[in-house]
Image (cartoon, rainbow, N blue to C red; front, side):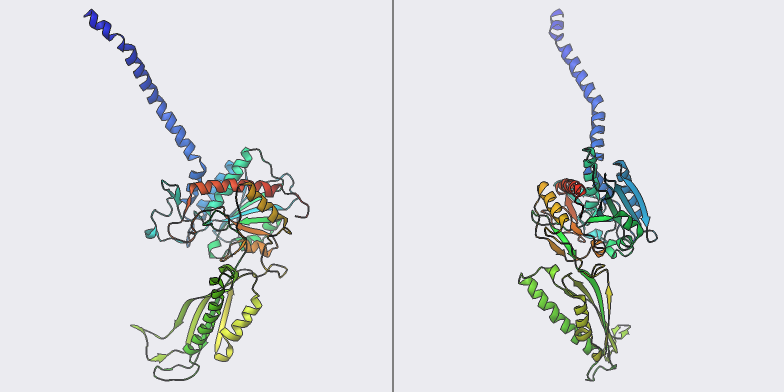
Length: 450
């Protein structure tokens, strides 16, 4: 018995040590897990996901929740906040980081709150879940257009403040409603307001688009959208009769002329002589004619009216007056019993009658600063482009303010307004660093003439 006891005694300290280690690991694990969870809760990625989970799609965007979220983020990094409202239930959030020299024109960073509708059944993941896949893709409506830049602005400023950076120029960030439906109750009214004039904006950054390659895309102008409605009139008649100038005949002649014009410019694009955004585009969007019946349409009666609608986009290099002459004389001439209506959705020229373009050469000091900041961030710029669609930047360009469209997304498929819109976490995080470089460089520029 004594011999057995002697053999067992060395095991007792070992067992005790194992129990002590086990108890230590159990007691430490909850704290460690909490610490990791706290880190994850406070990360740039989870904050981005939090914003993406707010449903701001039309026709009923939850602007209130979006503004509340962004305001809380802004207050957490010491920014001044102000909520404006130029149309009922359509708030505009304005954030400010005062510069050391408020007499200098300020920098404006813009983003829109709203998003386009979704078809959830056609998504791999729920469009407001902000699901993050194992390979880092964050799926959500707005991931590219343009909730990414909304949060990247804030994250870049968070980092700059942590580095004790002090801007010379005041920096403003605007979060505007209704961009996706024209911006008339958002950026348009904001740009025309006293509140905007008081900001003394000298330069603006707005949204751009993703690049499928490794170069960042930058946009110096937008195409201006028109809605063109053409109506044709003629005598009604039996379906068996042949006669000139029926409503349908007149409309089809116009459609044929417009189609030939469209093809001539499309051929230029297909030949590589111009980009899609550099030419006038005219696309038919609806045709309306005929006499309705319970089973469809009356098939033995020629209608007295026919109508067609077109989406027209004009680059800033196009002369809108010449396009209007073409419409009046060729596409919808009164001599063929035709009328037309042009709905101009936004400005065509600036307050001095100049094309809405921002110069991208060394005569524009803001362009030089922008280019240098991208280089310092380790990025490369593609050739500056005209955006094929439109953004809120046009309202600022109308005021004579230089504005560039830019979203720091490289090696990313263009998925704005598409199913399964996503942005990779690594691309998002890199974009924050790019904005750090841009914000610090632009706000430190002090040349008196700027």
